[in-house]
Length: 235
Image (cartoon, rainbow, N blue to C red; front, side):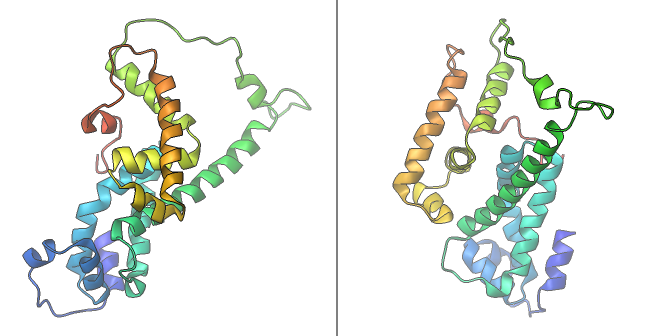
């Protein structure tokens, strides 16, 4: 459907450039080509970046279905902005900024819904009784023992990611998972490179605390391990 929308919103243009030539172009040139009506350029951009955008959104929200929906929303916004796009910033920086803003909006919506739910009475017929938030709290809970496994390690790491403040989690995901440079992240957020590095440092400190119990596991896991718990975009 996204490609159909791209053709619908795009202007018709003569195909004077082969697909092979388009595939060799950098992202920024492809976006300009699409703005001039070349729908195949948009298709190549989606092929290049759809999975990375999905991974970023999924790790921000930890909801596969919603991540798939918002990934499509990101590219719909790219379509709508095609005629206004300028090469003032790296395409991926612009693209992830769109994704980040959608994640922020979604997180705000969820927080609002969660507060309303948790502060409601635990039962419909309750009148001033405990709220769901009160009943969910369990100060006596302790971690169970057992053999350390890769699944446990990844589960614990995911808990750490979710516990990170939003701005630290975003920096970690963009830098450590998607491989963006500190300067690119700084441009995306409109902050200094030193601030980005500081957020990364605090994120690493917290995450190391979450996985400290797993002796023999290196925090510098490889790319496959980092992404192993992300459901497939088309799966």
